[in-house]
Image: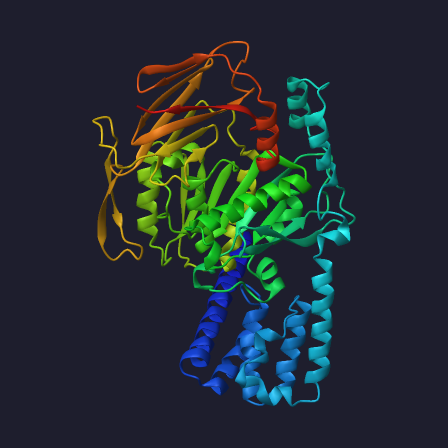
Length: 534
């Protein structure tokens, strides 16, 4: 029993210390930003900084720097500016316009510090250029057009060449972060960061994690500080090496929020571009996110899940454009803090509703915690990374259920629908009532679900596709050699009536176009069957 006392006391002390520091920081922030009592705030920041912070970040220290400068303690201000620089801070614009540091900028130490920081930023911006490491593009892709034009290569052999594609550039250095862009349209060119782990091997397929940070809802513009995002808003970063996992870290704002078409396009294009340059395991692509990023995970899981194996949401809100029934196509693992402003019970009842519909949704409450999860990331992220080790995208999958009210969110894996929500509701149309709470948990809600949606359930077995669909104009089935035996006829039954019964074949041009568009060696589509729904 005595052996247990010391560890218990240490844990108690650590917990109490963290609570004390958080209380000091909360009080300092209140004095700083609400009451404008900068001198009093400086005293509390100073006291808090004398102890280890639960989640050290340079922007917390910079808040203290501003108050130290205002109160005249320049030595302390420069001490913490140096600490911020050592932590990786490189953008002086974070504080240059803060009126509290006017006196600090008159100090003889300011100009040399500013020059030094700007030099660090220049070096950083050069270091994230993928051309520096030879991974700005994949020149090997030119082979594909040559293969397509070569009539001596039979269609089935071309299929094998594409399915076994393994030509990727070898990075000149690894353990590096590089920066790419996705071109959404003529006006949107959105950056994202990509981490290349030290043990990345271009000869072997690697797992890929897309991690979407929080805060994009409040951002009309993209963040100016290039480094702040992936280094300080990305708690997954320290886990990537052990997992030997490539990571995409999108730079996001409202223009590519995951309730807009552009938001879905941005993530899809970032994954496709990454798969063209790096050897990615098609069945080991994951998406995780926090806050607005967690909401994004829910939205993509129900709106455009094809690229992904599994979704991980941390303190997000599952109430986006997608449909609850669509959670049945991919598993979800979510965490909800007990005291989150996205009310825990509201999220939990929505997860239960999806589970009732057949979803594989693992829901966990993080007891005693609030929305900002970085201080308790060690309770969450190890579970996520362990879970990703065993998770894999289900393909071939013999059943897809797709409910949608949008022709933009119209596809999952081998099934695509063209909807007509103005059609009359049939007696087979599914509907149910979601009984839950509003976002902040202050009132109960009863949401009628299903009636206004196009609804499709499609199954596949032995060259036969059986489809039940309502409020739908047409159906497209994408053909994979992993599913269909081309030596035998393909049969399609829609709403109990056989509408297609004939052989199909590899469409060479279609297959190559699909491969270059999605760059998916597993879901490699060789043809499609499009049929009207009468």
